[in-house]
Length: 124
Image (cartoon, rainbow, N blue to C red; front, side, top):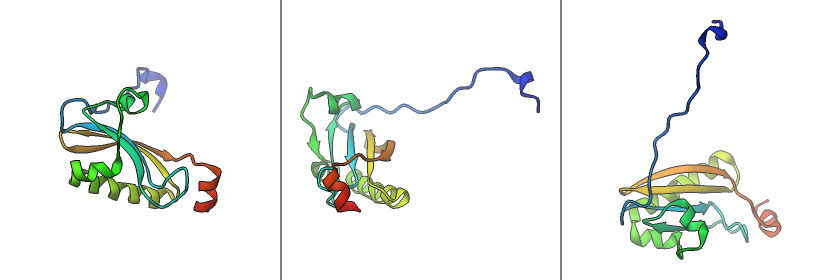
């Protein structure tokens, strides 16, 4: 194949999900471990009927991930299972962004999580 013959524009096609479409939608960020202490507990925050920027902007007060277990138990369980899967896969604490749209969980991104020096020592 001679690529010079096929000049064009490359594109990425992806689905968009919205956490601000109602009471069965939301967004959040979580860590597979506490990034301050290194304790092996799930840590994070979420907001219902919100977009990702709302969690970090400080406009509304987010809820702890433990509250998601009461609000949407099946979503919480699925998220906790994914947290475990991702940490086991990457062999490191993960920082995970997610959106819930119409009671369906979408994982937007994961990356190795930043942590304090004390947390790094505890996780080593």
